[in-house]
Image 1 (cartoon, helix red, strand yellow):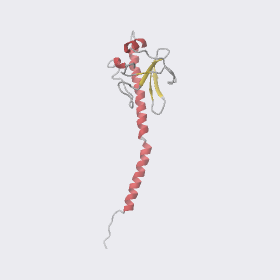
Image 2 (cartoon, one colour):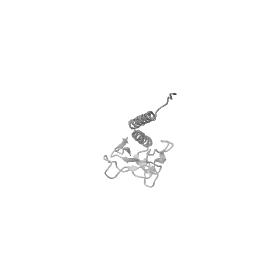
Image 3 (cartoon, one colour):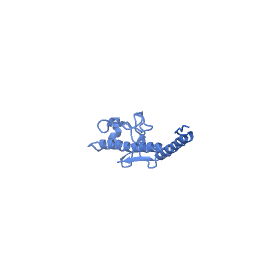
Image 4 (spheres, rainbow, N blue to C red):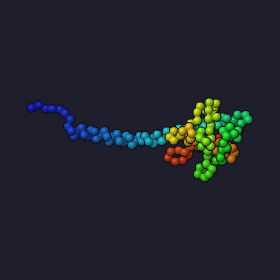
Length: 153
């Protein structure tokens, strides 16, 4: 009698089932959707700071103010609200008509106007700007999962 050494069907199925269980546990533990959301929120935070830095650099030069920036862009900034719900809401940054077009600052103060990593475009960046009572600039973005990132200077 010859004796064959091989894996049985049950052994192979057990190994496949074990690999499937381990893969699903790893997938749940890593949670790529949450990691991607956190990455996009971090990008929004960085972008709002970049936009504010560009506007602040322009405004900080001699003879310039928030009013001269508004005149350059051709749009008056609305006053800021602390709760982001009541009107007037911050004015969105973008190239579409009636929005705050910051392309006048490109090359000299910023490389390019950032856009929201999920929903932004050149026409509607996904970022908003308003002016506080003391004529300080405030840039904000809506975070995934709720809340806002807000920077002001």
